[in-house]
Image (tube, rainbow, N blue to C red; front, top):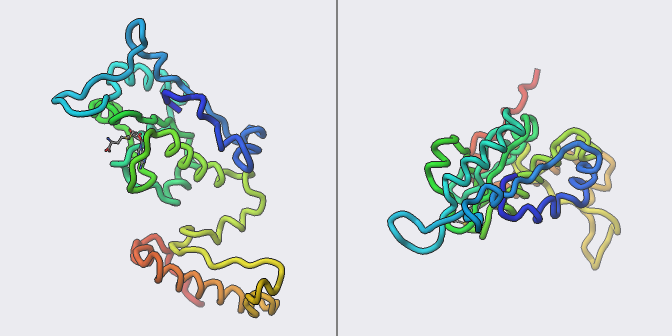
Length: 231
Ligand code: SAM
C-alpha cells in the first residue's frame, strides 16, 4: 500500500472479520510511505500542475522509485491506482483480486498523480464510485475489504457468500429474524413454512423483483450466469 498516510492502515481492516483474518495470517499488509522517496531536505512529493491551475500533483520522480521498491516486495502483484477515473470496482473484480497474487495499491492525494506514472507502469485505475474522495486510502480499504472477505477461511459459512448481492447478477432477497411479529409487522409466512423449495423460490422471486426495481442495469449487464438446463 503506497500512501502518504500509512498510519491510516490497517484502520477498520484491523477489526472484525478482516482483523481476525489479519491476526490469523490469512492476509497481510505492508505500507510504503511515499514521502520516504521525497526530494530534498523537505522530502517534497508534489508540485504545481504543468500548464497551471489549482492544486498540486504527485511527482513522477517520487512515485517511480516508490513503485520500483513496491515491485520488489511482490513482483507478481498487479499495480493498481485508486482513481475516480478508473474502472468501477465490482464483485467480479473483488473475486479476481482475492484469487490473485495480492495487489500493490497506490493511493493518490491532491489533484492526483503525474499521468506519465500511469502510462509507464501500466497502472490499472480502479474507482469505488462516481464521487471524489480526498485521497485514495479509503478507496483502497474498500477494495481490500471486498477481496479479503472472499479469501478462504475469512467468513465461516462459505455458503453465505454465494447468495449475496451481485454474486449471480442480482441483489439479495430480504432477511428477517426473531421476533416473529415485530410492532405489527409479521415475518413472511413462507419463511416459517419449513418448505425449503418454496423458500428458495420466494427468495429468488424477491431478488429478481428488487433487482428489476432498483438496478435494472444488472439484469442486462451480462454478469448473470445462464440457468442450468433441466435434463
Ligand atoms: N483531481 C481528481 C479528479 O478530478 O479526478 C481527483 C483527485 S482526489 C481529490 C485525490 C485522490 O483521491 C485521487 O488521486 C485518488 O487516488 C483518490 N480518489 C478520489 N476519489 C476516488 C474514487 N471515487 N475512487 C477511487 N479513488 C478515489
